[in-house]
Image (cartoon, rainbow, N blue to C red; front, top):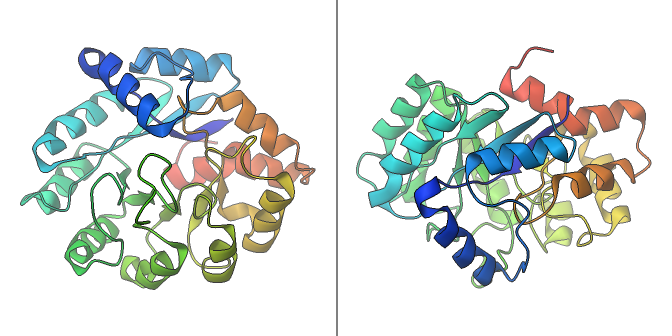
Length: 266
């Protein structure tokens, strides 16, 4: 099974506007699906994946509930596993984590740039602890965001500092541990108890760099990701296949690690 662990989609009524705004701010130029969930599902399957994890983000406190209502709906669709999100300025963020857990959601996405917090900010610590206590997977956007480049809110060094707060609960650092921050990732995150996803790497991250990180961090802690619709799932699959990994390591990265992490049937 091939699982794309890092994708995005949007409710039909806001999809066109969201895609237009995000495409413009990211400088990506091309979006590889139309926005809504069925378009995402159709495209990832056509591109060779069996399943996608959808990472939703609450960019302000007011939209937290609606974002998570959408995540719960997505989670009911065959072929999609959806993560929710909480906003650090929401007064009921901890209760919302409980609601997500009760609804069968297996993780949350936090985007420090879009949500305007530094990853080491102590006001986030209760959220980290609650997510860990519930056994939720926490995915961080890590490194530079090309739409919001300064300041970098989640650096490898600061992410390493707050990892102990999760007490072993699963943490995923997107974009090989820190987009455009390879040296810092190698220095601060290699060998730590967290996963990296490979999203947005094809044609942007030299293959020898990827192979070095995989070899030093261990293939068991690497998850295939694309960042669809901003990078094609098939390009990211082929990128992993181009790295001349062992068949066992390739299988782990393309899907087996995600199956284990998500507790899916083998």
